[in-house]
Image 1 (cartoon, rainbow, N blue to C red):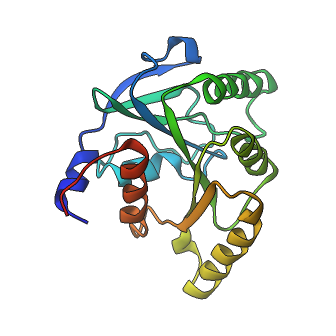
Image 2 (spheres, rainbow, N blue to C red):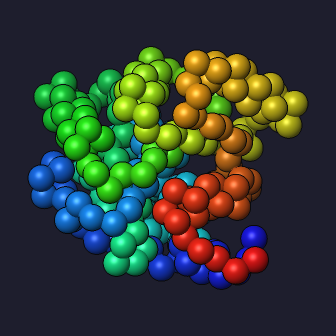
Image 3 (tube, rainbow, N blue to C red):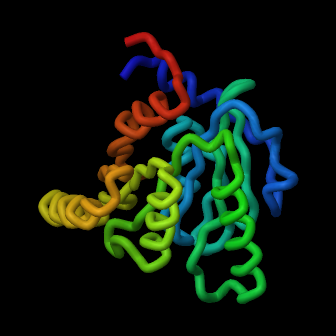
Length: 205
């Protein structure tokens, strides 16, 4: 992976945080969204991918990301941090608001090229994750799963978890999966290469 590729994602800068899609930046160009169950490691992954320590706020408190957060790479490309879902301690009304906002965004956003879905490798696919995959499959939206916190398992169990998820994904032909660790920086080049394809980023080898 060339240094130019990494430097490109270092361009990412916070643009705006909005509670609902109608307040989002103009729906033009291309963007990739990051989704996942609360505390699955979305913010940490965004920071690693962009080689920035605090682009996205990280917190040990699940449910920290409550808005659609847009990060601009250039005039035509963006990364989007979606609200974490499935955290029971968040009030029901708030959960419903988040779910509605995400549903509208995923359904209507024309510039959306793909979804990066964070799944904690120790928990694998939850009901919420499966619902997200079902929706994306019906919409023919490509999904790439990051099995986050892979450093929490030894190499053997981590590979077994990866194979288990790959078998589950046989019914989701538009979905791929990889191991990922923000702490060990495992898998960062692989996900950047995918982003290059989805966002049509040209880099020098």
